[in-house]
Every structure is written in structure tokens, then in C-alpha cells.
Length: 411
Ligand code: ASP
Ligand code: MG
Image (cartoon, rainbow, N blue to C red; front, side, top):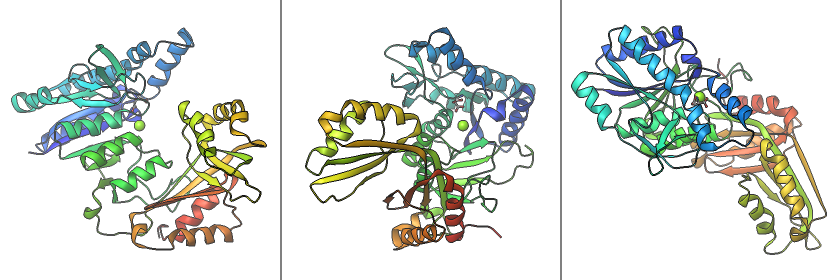
């Protein structure tokens, strides 16, 4: 018997009519003989609304109570979907995070799942052919007995982790797009939906700016090897179209060297001029940032002449001001002449497991960008991707250029 986890995001459950539509998708799989656990998000916009209420109540609210408030969004949709399924004659019940239970760390607002007890859900399949409708995004910190949430977009991670816990054959993520594209189709009209993408590639795509899935959910899919299928919830429930399967690289036939181009405008660059070129300076710069929880991404250090050097690195745009303040405070202990920053920068990346076995892929990309007059401010590479930092104004041109260069344009 097939065992499935089906996950529906906020736009897919935005109102009762759409929840009825979701129930029809679930019924289709149940009728085909599958055991189904469904994971739902809150109705579109609800989590924002609930979070805003916390802020309105007190600017520095208690994170544990914030979790109690925002977890309510998923409680509503889990109950409503169970009702809609029963209405179609499909046995169903809701499960809140604490009921399953889905156990997490105590990092309120950004908790990590530590384990999921799937036995009662599986018992429901076996004894009552009952669909389990699980509230995404929420869990329980058992030692304190408090409700936790996983961080924005976290119900993707709930779904993949649940699929691993109940040993599901697949995790289907129903969303408002019909799969994973070679790049954002709103930017490049010739972007194509991929039939398949490897776990590692999807992890890079998600980390580097593609917004289809929460990064942690892809990490969980990779670690537990859960085949994850991204598909549209707006298809006719009785005649759904195909989506994109995230799977092992061995299960992909057609391979291109580069499979996708991702970008992020959420970047900022900081340059420290004339820091001493001696041991310990990088630590003096990056330790205070790390201690404050600021993530540093690309780092470029220029070889200096007179025992002095320039250091450039990037942080997310949201952390730009915080990073700048920290470094200004640490000016004496670091010792630099000036600090400059820019947040009109963007990071554009090309991703593909084929890069492991092909030399010169990045160099070709740099050449193509140069021919368009795009200046590269910083570069990072790994086995299966390269990223360039450029002026934000050139983002679309750079994405178009790389997408065409690596043969990803359709038609
Ligand atoms: N409702 C939560 C959010 O809006 C979790 C999710 O939808 O994945 O972030
Ligand atoms: Mg989402």
C-alpha cells in the first residue's frame, strides 16, 4: 500500500472553498488506495496577522506566547480540512503538534524538530482507514510542555519530517506554482519546469534564493532521502498535472551541467579598507559578527602591498545595519581605515551537479557576464555551484545571460 504525505500551503487553504478543493485532492489519493497524512499551513496571511497582533500587544513580547498565538493559524485549517474530508465521506481527524506529538527544541519561533511519534497516525490508517490532518509549523517542547513553532515557511519541514517518520513513499508539496523552474519564470519567460532535480541541487537552489521550499525542508528531504514532489494545488483535483520530483541524483536520466540559475537581491556588501595583513585579523572581524548571530556569506580578501589589505564580505540585507554597528564598535580592536557598505547588490548563482565533472563552467559564465559589461564584485564557488555578487541593477540581465549560456532556455 502506498503511504503519502500531502502538504498544502497558505494560498491552497486560503478560504473554505479552497479547503474543499484540497479535500478533493486528498480523496483522489485515498480512492486510489493510499494511506494519507496531510500537513496544512495557516490560511494565507493569517500568520502575518497573528504575528502583528503580538507586536501590537507588546513590542518585546514573550517568544513562548508568540508561539502559542501563531500556532493557532494551523489549528484552524487542520480542523477545517478534517471537516471537509468527512463531508466527502472520507474518515479524517486533525492532529496538533502536541497531540502526535511532534517534538522540537525549545528555540521558540525557530524550533527544530527532534522527533515525531507516528504510531498513532499509522494506527489510524490501519484500524480506521483514517486520514491524518496534521497542523504544520508547530510542535511541542516536551520538557517544558510548551508549544513551539518552526520559523516562517516551516510547514514544508513539518511535512518532510513527518514523511520520514511514518516512512512514507513520497511527500507531495502542493503549492501555488506547478513545480521547480530552471529560474524564476517571472524574470525569464523561457524558464522551464524541471521534471526532476537532485536533492543537493534543490538545497543549493533554495539556499541561494529560489523560494519554492523552505531550506530546512530540503535538508530534511536530503538527510532522510524522502522523494519530494512539488506540484500545483490549483489543478483539477480529478486530473492533476505533473510537477517536479526532488530525488537522488542516480534517479535522474537527463543531466545538464547547469540545471538552474538562482538569485537573491537580499544581499549587502561591506568593505573594510586597510586592515593589517597579519594573523588574527579575520578572527577579529568575523568573531563579533558570529557572536551576534550575523551570517557572513561571501568573503574576498585582496593581497595587500604594505602589510595592509582590504576585506570585502556580504551579509543579508536585513542584517546590514546590525553588522555595520558591530564593526564600528569593534573598530579599535580590528584596526581599519574605513568601512563602506552597499545594499544595492545582488547574488546570482548557477547550480548543477554536472559541475563536479566539468572544468571551466564558471569561467564561461564570467566571460559571458563580462561581455554584457557586468562587473563582478565577489565570487564564491562550491563543487556544484558558483555565485557572483553584482550591482543589483544588473540582476535580470545576469540571470538571462547565464540561463541562455547554459542551454536552459526553452524552445
Ligand atoms: N503559516 C506559517 C507561515 O506563514 C508556516 C507555513 O505556512 O509554512 O510561515
Ligand atoms: Mg510556503
